[in-house]
Length: 556
Image (cartoon, rainbow, N blue to C red):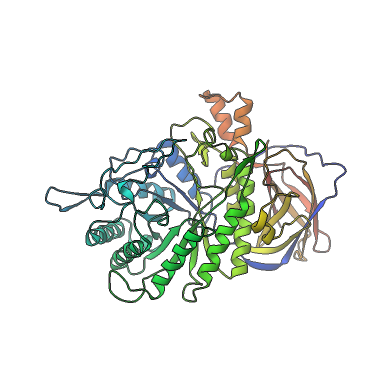
């Protein structure tokens, strides 16, 4: 993990406001804190091995002591490997004049080598269709222009194969090559996911044709490595009736449908994937987040999977889980996306993380991953409002949330707040009334971590919250604890604020760039301090600014 800075900063409590009480019971575990946050992805695979892409992959891999997974589109698309917005290619499959396959793994290897060298792992999205196999090969390379209708974006790469046997052989050889290059044990730890969002224009086929694609793909993967993890269908948010219907029919097919590849019953399924997206808007000149939509997507998918006895215990990966649906849609062109540069993005994500755990607990679901679809767009203006984790190598505030999460390990603890908003209210309307001041707490031997926030859907100035955090049930031999406080707010762990104070330079000087890099690190609010414990109980009086995230680490 990168070095952590600390800044001494005096926070003046808000006067005349009753403190919010957050209570953590250190003696009551409610489930494990699975590292569901260690999943990331992006459209453009060729950005992986650019200078800033490689830097960011290394930072992501360093977030956690557990595996970090990376998912990208276009891994099998035809082209010369030149990146572009919402496009990428590897040219893994072509054919000679006689129609004989030619396999070329060089660009794919470059991508996966970058992951593995950094310590990350591929979450392999098997797609899209090579031009030589597409049932509609022309036009092939898409054109995507920000702000335009882009009706022709889903071109030849989004069509079913003209020859399923050749498609199966391509996938089989890809998996075999991966085993030969990286070893069976390594490849066994990867996910292999079939396609992306086949319920919309990423797939110009029917749901039945997707089932056929899945069967042939799964057959290829399992023929190459029977212990490999295969899954799907990576549909859009199941709060949509059409996406829910697609997910349900896919699970029915895997359960008892006729397998297109083998003629048998059902299809192998090792994990289930689908997407969950929010819906921000602009209301009276400010951004209003749509967290209810993302929570509803997650919840509806959990319910559908739980309705299948055969699959309800399978791992579920939300293989895209974001505040909205277009990472390459800059806030400069799409005003509702103006949440992306500052503190609203990380605090929203913290609230969503706790919501996912609560919904999974409620539905008795095995959630394994909550994948953030955000990376780095090479050679774009600084802080141009893309959904990214960094801009030109400068880390944005949201990346520091994941650094906070990487410091948290163990079991989730029972946590209560006077300001907690019920899960049903979040599902029904989001956070539109009083601000949501709450926390997620975890514990392991000799350490408790409390992630706290002050969130509202409306991106408007608001008062800080006076907060009293009470931790009960501490070990009797813990007479004092060491408190470390980390903070993401307007003046901590926030490169965007520093960039604006510089005058928003388009080409920062070397000195300015170094200052921006430092501001992009996770910062401590103040120096660590020892706090006395009385009768196995600890009380902390704190202030949480609006749209901020705080991590309190207690150790003894």
